[in-house]
Length: 159
View 1 (cartoon, rainbow, N blue to C red):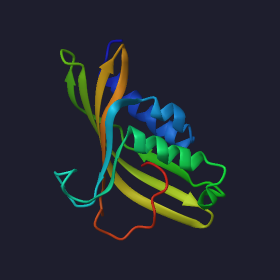
View 2: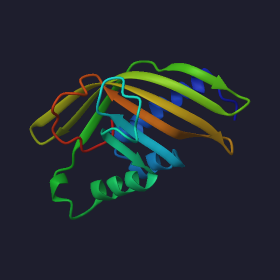
View 3: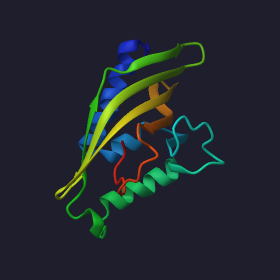
């Protein structure tokens, strides 16, 4: 696979579509086994390990989250939450064909809804991608909520 700016941008749009359509198993297949999904608690937070975060989940925890969302006995998801990502065209910040590493930054509005409650979040998503056996994989994803220091209801899905 030849990785171009368009390839990287399409990858980000495809990931958002998978999440919006609830194709979580397919979304999990985009991840590297040691990948981390991180949502900092503080503005410009640099430390994911020694500071509290809204989310800091490895692939095991992401799989547990998906199992819970898909579970027949997950009563908090009856009816299921739904989401919608409205994304700006992603910026490609790094293309390194030699190491097979790539970085993107995407500004978006994320809406999550269940029953008559709706939550709107303004976000910045940063993807660190790697090329593995001819396929792009998510090595790390950082999602910064613009007003991260506000009080939130539970975020059920994955911005």
